[in-house]
Image 1 (cartoon, protein in one colour):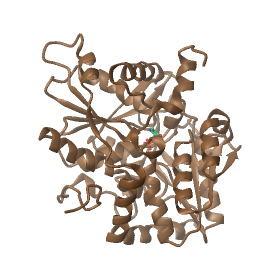
Image 2: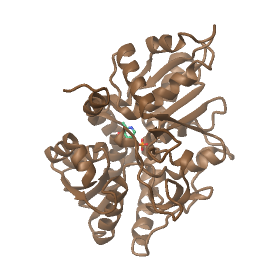
Image 3: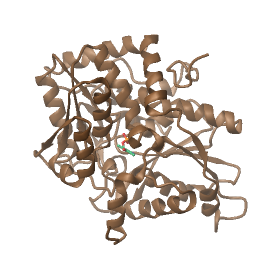
Length: 421
Ligand SMILES: *Cc1c(COP(=O)(O)O)cnc(C)c1O
C-alpha cells in the first residue's frame, strides 16, 4: 500500500496522455524550454539530472511524504460547502446550481500551498549537497514558506523581494526575518516580483557552487515548471482519491486561481486524463480587462520569453514586460507557467478571470456562509465558481482549490471596504 501522498499513487498514463508533457527539453508544445544564459545552462542541466534521479528514488519520495504529513499537515480535508452552494443556488432556475466542494490547502502549515513545493525543492537541494538557499517572493507567501523550510533544515536563506513589495508586505517581511531569512529588497525595474526573480537568477549564476534556487511557481527554465508541478500535484492526487471515496465519482469541474499557475496545475494535473472533468483557471482581472490594470497573462498577453521560458506574457508592443495589477499581491505575476499556456492552446483547460471587485464580494460571501476567511487569491476562484455554479445542474460537483487563508489579507480587505483597523 502506498502512502496517500506518494508519487506512485498516480492514475495510469495512456499513450495519448495529457500528463506526459514536457519533452526532454522542457517543451509543452511551443511553450516552456530553457532560455537561459550559457553560464546558467550547466546548472539547469545538473538540476534536471538530479531531479530525474530523485524522482526515481523511493527514499526521496518517502521523506517528501513524511514531511508533508507531519510538518505540513497533509492530507488536507476535502470539504462540501453546503451553505455556499445553497446561497449560490438562490435565483438560479429550478434544478440548477452545482454542489461546491473545497480542497482545504489553506490549512497547510504557513497558510497556503507554497510549502508543498518548498519541501520538495529543499530536499532536492540537500540531495545535491547545496548549503545555501535563495528564493524570490512577491506577496511574501513563497518567501515565508522558503524561510520556514530553511529553518527546519538549518540552511541559510536569502529572499529577493521587490522594494515596493517589501513596503507593502511588512508582516510577511517580519515573518521571514523571524524565521532567520535575510530579505534583500530589489530596486531595479518596477521593484516588484518579476525583478526579484531576475535578481534570484543572477545570484544563482554567481553562486552556483553552493546555492540552490527555490522557485515559487510553475515557471522558470526547465525542469522547474515540471518539478514544481510534480510537488504540487499532491493537491490533485489527494482530491481525486478523497472525492472518489466520499461521493463515488469524479467532480464535473475543477477551479483554481492563477498567479504563475502552481496551485492550479497541482490540482488539475492528476485529472487531465479524465475526460469528464472540466477545468477552469482563473486569472486576476484587476480593474478590468479593458484597461492595463490587470494580471491576466492569457487573456491580455501574447507569447514571449521571460525567466527562462516561453509563455504568454503581459508586454507592450516592444516586448517590454508590463507590470501586472491585482488586489491580490500573489496574482500579479506578468506571466503564467508554460504548461497552462499549452493546456489553453490545445483546449484542455478553460481560462477565465475575476476582477478585484468580484474577488472582494466572493471573499465576503465565503466568510459569511462557511466561516472560512480565504486569501484574496482563491477569492478569485470563488468568484468564478459563483458564476459557473448556476449554469450547472444541482447534481453536479465543482471542486475549487482553497489555496490560502486570509490572515495576510485582512488589512487590504479592510482598506478596500473603507474600514479603519
Ligand atoms: C502565491 C499564491 C498564489 C499564486 O501562485 P500560483 O503559483 O498561481 O499558485 C495563489 N494563491 C495563494 C494563496 C498564494 O500564496
